[in-house]
Image 1: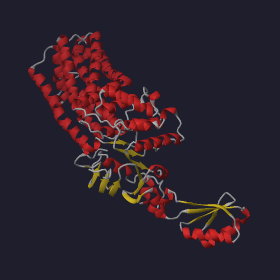
Image 2 (image 1 turned 60 degrees about the horizontal axis):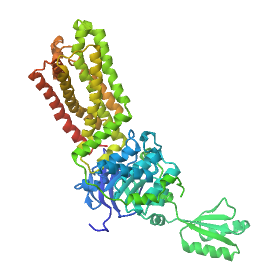
Image 3 (image 1 turned 135 degrees about the vertical axis):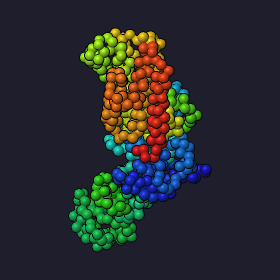
Image 4 (image 1 turned 90 degrees about the horizontal axis):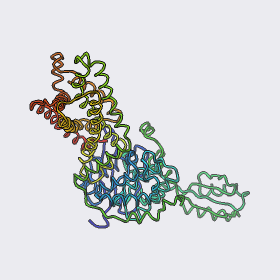
Length: 325
Length: 278
């Protein structure tokens, strides 16, 4: 086992539930270190894949190595070094926050006093000290999530699976969870994160795999994915709003396509990723005596990427997907 | 930096996260004890479930003794001597089904996945819960026995006989508990476990010798009653508390326990490992 070995390497993973092939031949290489985003709508196969990799579900076909160990032959070696935070908070609602962490600490082999000390430490950094003695059923969604992640890092894992860690959280709690993920990665943990929020993948992930209907449809850095789709947007800002009509004519002639008049009377935008034409257009504007006070090239959003890759928007629910299929 | 609660200072997080000291994997006993501790905490936090498990046995004691007792045994006092051992068995059985309900709750709520994702001795999850239940039985048996004594129950077997009955009931409940573990692993929700257990328990309790002597029943029903493990448990408890237990009765009671254990413990463990688990 060397340092460069990927954290996860799968080949042809398949899992079927009855007639439905929830995961239909997934090949994945997740490098060690950083955040790997697993992006897809509900029912795309994200959770099923993650449950197989976390040794909770046996694949019907395919092979996988996780942290250098064979998934089928050495699941216990994998379990000893990874943690999973599932989609639904996997903590005991009847117990208090502190008791939950002591429970996990004891199961990991800490003596009672050490487990209690570790629990207090984690409650502190996860901002749960005040709620330590409260039963988890009285926690808010954000508190539950934080406790859930704390429970996953009682012994810092080398690999952490986070299944939709921010689904259902308010923006403030979501940002807290993001901060914790970044801190974990800084401490050397590899994080595999599933999400249906493109924004989340964009913010956190070093690499992203897009999964749709049980198959990986694209893989790369968020930047690469956006570039592969191509269509960025050029935003042009004019010094004089009176010249907007003339500028529109020039842009339409040189770049082509539909020129959009933004709400700002000085601004125009047009979809293009052809840098040469954009350059020419700027020169043409200058020749026509139209003063440009600024311009900006914006990459396509991951929403656009998802649509381009799968032919349907990212936010379809399971029913919609079945209806479409 | 939109998160500004002082307690969630993320700069402190990396320090807490760099401690990668992984203690030695705990052994089977330690793991089982940890899960027992968890079960005890649940009794501490939510004692209502324990209280509610007293109600039915107490109601049955009062109704059967004072309403039917005179007709069934000539006098309410004589009937109480007959009924109480049966009620003790019923008390344990009524609590017993919670084993399956709480296991099913663990599975549906997701904490079961966390346990399964740990490198631990897995049977400890079930064994610890069953041991925690043992405390519930003890508490409930003490309460119901005290009520019996108050009403005039006078076990001929004395203190030793009653203690023997309590010990036997622990064994019986442990063995029967695997049936509910199996149900908890198969069924979809805690509610369906509850429904199934009510559907199974009431016929089993009535088609036994809890309330009346088997010899008073028609022959075909006696056949059913005699294969019911509850009947053998009641006979043993009646024998222990009455000081009249024969070796044959005790052997049959142990056989009933053994059959339950041999059928349902391996079945539970199989279901537990089964890949078809959600």
